[in-house]
Amino acid sequence: MDTSALELRFRLGTIPVTVEPWFWLSGLMFNTQTSQGPRIALWLLVFFVSVLVHELGHALATHAFGARASIRLHSFGGATQPSRALSRWRNVAMTLAGPGAGFALGALAFAAVRFVPNVSPLGLWTLDRLAIVNFSWGVLNLLPIPPLDGGHVMLSVFGRRHERVARIVGVAVAGVAVVYGLTSGQPSLAVLFGFLAFQNFQTLRAMSSH
Image (cartoon, rainbow, N blue to C red):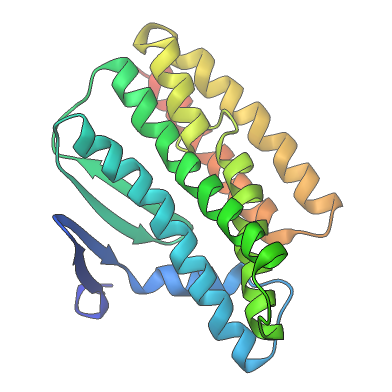
């Protein structure tokens, strides 16, 4: 189904940003702890800002290395597309800049909870979610599972000769994450990592057929 007419498009400086409608639906899926109207809207704001800041980390690092970048927010997250390929270690640095930006945002939110006076209960709730989301998702995103950032770093370090090993590691780690999601009462986490495990398994099958 063509949903391009429903996409939100804007620019942050020279960086074009596209938000697919499925992005908002995936945000609702990750809303596992709130059900009241105002908090649902605030959760979607936390989700949007957190993913956007993460992708901006990638995009700004790409610009620092002399290339341009565009951002697309889609179901289950986002993607930053450089205008040209970067060298291996610049690509690693660009990849790590995304979680780094998220950790910085989480630290700012945590500091605001601790030190900013007279914040409303909804404001404290929002800042608390910003801190939790950016720290926890940042750590998860560094797991060695392609196409997560940790997986991209692993693929860059291993190189094309050892991509099969990287994909096997990705399937194994994703499988452990699925079990954790199921046993800890986090079905959305299990679904996400189940999808990533399937993606990497399919890539392994395609590599075996060549």
